[in-house]
Length: 155
Image 1 (tube, one colour):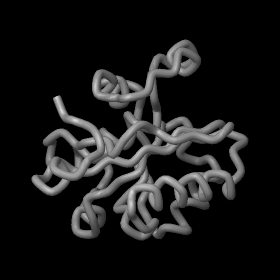
Image 2 (tube, rainbow, N blue to C red):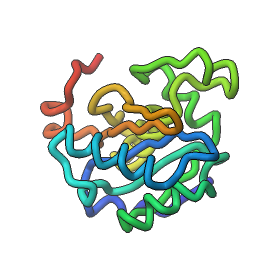
Image 3 (tube, rainbow, N blue to C red):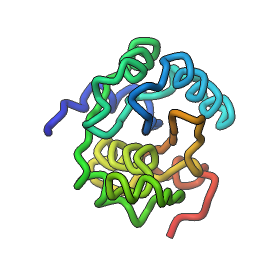
Image 4 (cartoon, rainbow, N blue to C red):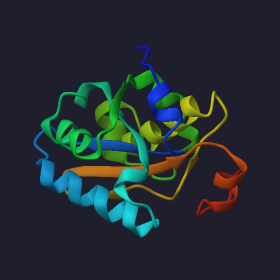
């Protein structure tokens, strides 16, 4: 799937990856994203885009979040998410058994950050955060500023 990323590139280097169960209420997801951005010293408006697994792209919570942030949503197929699997920080055996991916939120954030950086590796701001029904992860594009300011050492 080819998505036009030009509107994301000029806004900021921070992106959000989301994993969620289909029944996740919008308020649960928005609250999670509010917490994770605040914990990293960001405003929700600092986010350039949202990425998630293609199978969840039509979830009401994803659309409510995108509308509240005025952000684009990028749907990613499993092979794209699996490609960055070695770089995720969190591994869910349950998720691995269900869909063959260790962390949708972290992988989605990394894939989108990589795209925005023109193929350079993006960096996670830290492990994903979760509620009972959703996960969220922040990543930034691979710039000197990003590499100096992430919360874990890069390989």
